[in-house]
Length: 482
Ligand SMILES: Cc1cc2nc3c(=O)[nH]c(=O)nc-3n(C[C@H](O)[C@H](O)[C@H](O)COP(=O)(O)OP(=O)(O)OC[C@H]3O[C@@H](n4cnc5c(N)ncnc54)[C@H](O)[C@@H]3O)c2cc1C
Image (tube, rainbow, N blue to C red; front, side, top):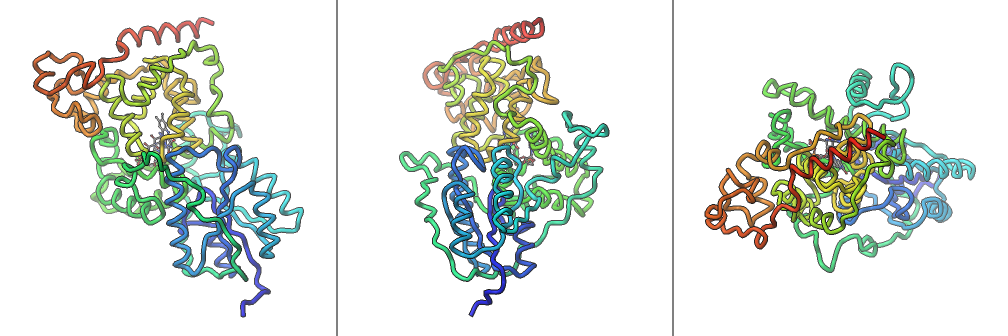
């Protein structure tokens, strides 16, 4: 007979779909409570925020993986849809649960839901305990010397690094006590998170293993081989020197503290330049959350309101060519096709395609933010918004607007043999290295030998980069003159 004197805790999983380094779960297990693991599909405008189509695919597989892991501990995951307050009230009534534990989230809609909910539950006599873990440092606690929040990355990094190591990751519990009875849940398939007609996510399956196990494997592989040389080679998209952990971090299948600690105590084969640089990149994620926390409209409003007067162009045809990877600039097209085929894009190429959209096409950065949010498996409300504003020059500590990437020379520098372009733009695969990034400048004989017919098999450039650059600078000067 189950001991009904032991209290049942609802363990509400959100952007922390893991068992290791999960403070809420570890505490509930260590204190011997009966645990009812729950995931709520909240309305799109609340809680976890709008879910893009690519991340919905990921979420399906991640929940399935979490379900399997929980079963391994003698537990199970209950799935419910609706407003968190309604779902929790119903579950508490059905199961007699006396407490709700969760790890905190830091996106503005999520914070708003959690605040109201916590007050309501406490009022109803339910214990609520919340824990850290989604980011390295609480955004409300890290302060400048003057007591304000940070706007510039380097002092933020120094403050975070100087505040001591994040706590050691907590091991996953070995077993979880079950509640008195299991409540009914919804079937994952009924949520229709996967695309069907057509199944555009086929390429995702070859690339990714969503879930905690996939995240741990990727981290181990990265530390073993990719991390050496990270500082200098992380900019080369044809090489395997980045971790590709971002989608796992986005849904919390692994904690940032686990990444940090995986780069401690390494042998002398590793250069500290590499692992410190890696930690610094992980801290960019924290910095983005810091900005979002203090500027909740980061995805919709220019941080620097001078940009409100920017003369953006309404050009749906050009936007579509950019989205489809049909701009005639191989590096841009390779990036946009990598995004479409795999749900992810290398960081260097994200900067190139974003600069192209904003500065060559003069299209509002918010169009790019929206497209990325829908197509990235790592779509993150903080990093996506902060990064788009960074490229646009409108953000806090942003790249200056006049830093306009030349997509051709960026390609020549970071993909010198065109390995990356050949992978994602196969119609150019037989172009010689010299012209792989500028087929429109290749002599006709070279094009013919490579089987390329400009305007037919591969597009001519949709804008002239030199002229587009001048137009962008003129628009920016106009802004400064105001
Ligand atoms: C226009 C644009 C949009 C972006 N949108 C997103 C997004 O929606 N989600 C997202 O996670 N990242 C975003 N980034 C940041 C960055 O491109 C990705 O985090 C990175 O490419 C992920 O690959 P990785 O895991 O191999 O990174 P690694 O180089 O292995 O870095 C490790 C981790 O550090 C963090 N990180 C690295 N670079 C950055 C950065 N510049 N900003 C914030 N965090 C960083 C990520 O969590 C990453 O997983 C965007 C960048 C740009 C320029």
